[in-house]
Amino acid sequence: MKVNVKIIICFLILSALTTNACADVLFPGTRGMERCVKIVNLDEFPEIVLVGHITGPVIQCENPYIISSDECLTKFYKGNDLTIYAIDKDYLDAKGLENIDLETDPNLYSYEVEINPELDIVNEEDPLIREDIEYSIAGFSEDKLIIYTSRKVSKYNDVTPDRIETFEYPDIPGIKLTIKENASCAEDNTSALEDDLSTDEGTVQEVEKVKDEGILDSIIRFLKGLFNAK
Image 1 (cartoon, rainbow, N blue to C red):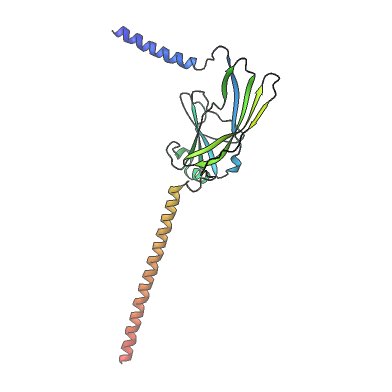
Image 2 (image 1 turned 135 degrees about the vertical axis):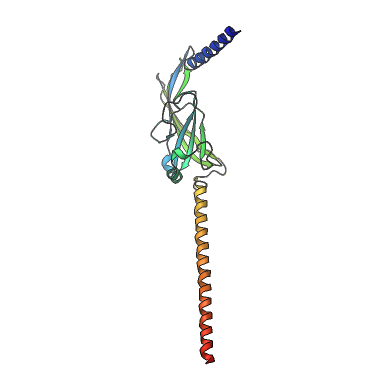
């Protein structure tokens, strides 16, 4: 019985290793194709910072990482997932990226990248060798960052000329162009509370001043009464 258990354990370990190894092996008749995905209109949203967050079995790179318009997105390994978070710049500066829980913070807007931003698999006879994809920020809706493909350039290894495709801005009802109204809610509430306290303190001081003036007037009237009596 013990021998059988050992055999089963060894089989499971071998299966797991084989599965991971096969995940990086191409099927016969296929090959890899390069891809670069960039978010190109960050300058239109200077009040936010985009942060890429990778989850998955193999992560050997900076994570999370700040996204810039001139660098290709990465999720490091094809079995990983990549989520992009839009964070208010002032909020990020105040808290620090290391203190923000990207998956639970209600002040963030997220977008899940559905394609592999670095490569794809094509048939060997397919002349497509590279895709340069431009993502653009459309805005924000509820807790979602709205990103769409605005331009794609496909390159080939034969006489086929580069194919350039452009795509229209999505028509999404209620889309917002800023996240300022929702970011840093806690800080805004704290500031409002401090303002209320300051106002209350000022009101108390004014009341006390009125009370002091009332007592002084009473004393003056009392003294005048004494002198008049004489």
